[in-house]
Length: 347
Image (cartoon, rainbow, N blue to C red; front, side, top):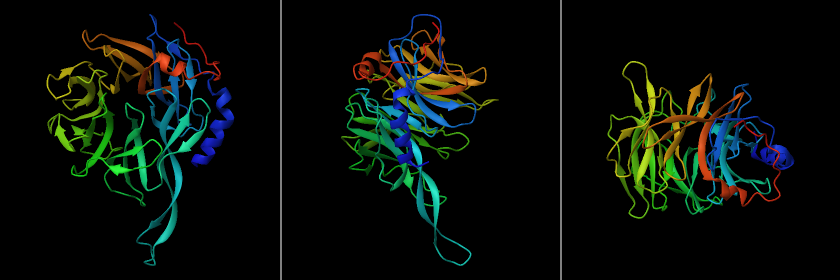
């Protein structure tokens, strides 16, 4: 669907998007954070981005059913996400030996202003762009991209660009193969990512975790070739990295692990069987993640010290994929004038 149509929909509906979806906050004191989530509707109507507020209110931020993999700016004002647009490309190898133009869909990154509802496309159409991650200072996006071409089999590579779409450049040109799931160090000088042994959206995206030092332009391995790791997330104090590890002894499983930022002291935090998308709490004491439960994916948290796991939030009629956790005050300070008519969850 065209991004300009997405912009029109969001601008028209923004005054009612803080809406009407009854989430269920689990028993106990609610955490003082906002949870940015991707919504996968079980009705099959697509994907949207939303936010679970600390009081249990759920806000649906997009209504286009095509918003995927979002990241918030540090001040909480902007949401960067990827969505599909139509692109005219050339197809080689036609029956008459000629190249013909065809219309296909590619992913592009856009920015949603959470104060005004305005949507601006950030990507320039030169690549198929996914998985944006905003830098700690809010000035850059790390993301993955590959050339725009019909039925492309080119690998996904990590890029950087300014948050206005300018200064686009390749991050780690010397590492071959697919790269994905970037996460910034808190000081903004390094990016941890997964070097993927399979296609990004293959059966299982697995691989080696690497760190790119942006000042030295060097890359270091954090995990071995046979550890099968992905989806890294840097802790708020910069000392640890959470990630998922795959095991294939019997039934395949995905567990949440944590290690020091130099790759040492690896510890398993959860027992799966399908734990994904680890994200740190702002105080660094818990790692939040999603897990299938009763048919849909729901948000859980594990205590890094005790390894106690508890369920935090679920949304009837949808699976939730955790994207980001923010202190509640950051978004509230920018929410003046926004409607606050979201549904209250059950404590």
